[in-house]
Image 1: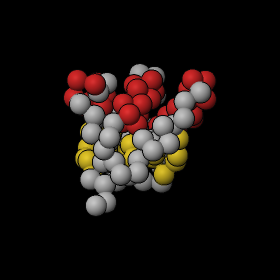
Image 2 (image 1 turned 135 degrees about the horizontal axis):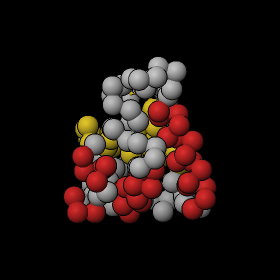
Image 3 (image 1 turned 60 degrees about the horizontal axis):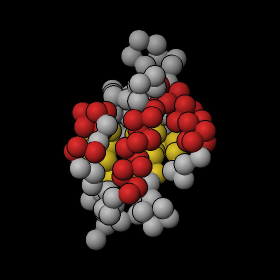
Length: 120
Ligand code: FES
């Protein structure tokens, strides 16, 4: 998978609207890393300070060399950790990062904020 890679960037700075002390992205990243380790998957999960979608935590970006980058929001730690891993696997398998609609988990269909092309 080295040449068809995927990194999941997770914003750990967003605050929970109902509980400003809670950082949903940080909780999501911890759960994601634990699940990736449990499943022994070669996908990286990295923290970032802000993805500029601050009102819709948890927010991630799927990125890879020579691939389109997707920013996805409204992720729930209880419901979407495995869906994000599935999304990253489909992303990693793709040639250019574009994943067919039918192959996307629901959170990847509904939560996309933007996509950005790779550098030429
Ligand atoms: S603080 Fe999380 S996207 Fe801005």
